[in-house]
Structure formats: C-alpha cells, structure tokens
Image (cartoon, rainbow, N blue to C red; front, side, top):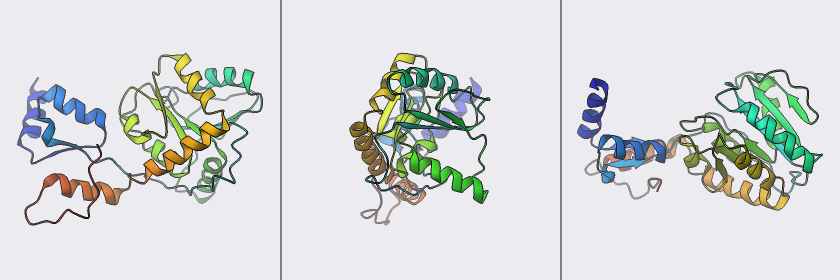
Length: 242
C-alpha cells in the first residue's frame, strides 16, 4: 500500500506521465486515477536493427516462422511448437526457426539455433539471415510488457504474432496479430493466416510502415512534446502515439 501511494504521488506530481505502451497508459489512468490528458504514449525504439528484405525477393510462398526468446516458458515457446505441428498438417513445407533458450527439438521442419549474441559478428549475421528469410515472427508470450523484438521483426519487413497480455499490441500495431496466450486456437488461426502468402506480404508491409514510428530519436521528441516546455517549438517533433 505504501509503494502504491508513493507511485501515485509521483504520477500526480509529474508534469506529464510518459508510457512506452497503451497498456501502461491505461494502467496509470485506471489504477492510479491520473487524468487521461496527462498520460501519453511515447513508444520505444528497437535495440537492434535488421535490414528490410525487398518484399519481392522474399519467398512468401513457403511459410517460414521465426521465434526469438531467451525465456522459453514465459515466451510461450511450447505453445508455438504445438501450433506449428498443426500448421504442418496443412502446410507440410512450413518451417520454424527457434532462437534463444529453447530445449532440444527434433521435429521435422524445426531448426534450433540456440542463443545468438547480437554483439558477436557471426551470430548477428546468422540472425540477420533468419530475419531476411522468415515470412512471419511468432512470440505469443504468457506476459510481455512491450516486446521490442516485434519492432525488430517489423523493421525486417515481417508481420508478428504477439500476446494480448501486456503491451505488445502497441509494438505490433496493424502489422500482425495479438492472441490470448492461453488459447491455442487463436494462435493456430493467426499462424494459418500468415501461411497465406498474400496476407503475409500485406501485413509485412504494414509492419514495416508501423515500425517507422519506433526509433529512440522519435521517443525523445515525443518526451519533449509531452512535457510542453515553454518557448520550445514542437511543430517538427514526432507526434504522440494515439
């Protein structure tokens, strides 16, 4: 109770409350009673950038899913494997690449790459290749505060499947789907939708456009805009995320 009161006092005394996601914004308003006019979504930026593959060069006809997550359980990796098994029943040519803290997997169409450290040149090159070849990113976490990895996937030009539990929807926008992490049918439906090459390419393009809002430079510009500092011209700064 003491921590809650101190947090509420901090929000109340702030010139503006800036949240990375709509999920956090809603909590500040609902749980702490802060006026909505004072709470703004400023987004976040990708920690790593993977070059976009020319949409015409990507092989959309063959579904290729990519999962990247260190915490296999929290990132809901087993649910992805289970859903992929059903995807393969309908699309035998589909593949799934796993990166991070996944267990040993011996299933047709699934390749495990283990941990790939982004600051190691060889591992980064491997990740870049995986993002360039994938047709969709899937990480329906049990809980995800934001999910910068969805922005990284979007910058590479592929749609994402994320979780409804947390703030992933802000990072994914209209470039993919959010699903109930406890509903395997929702996950399967989203994965099957992205097996369609037309849908995958269309949502990949939307994801790439959505990702352009999410740079650390634009986050800084939104912070300045939200603070409404006297005599500071904000006309050319990035707009707040609605």
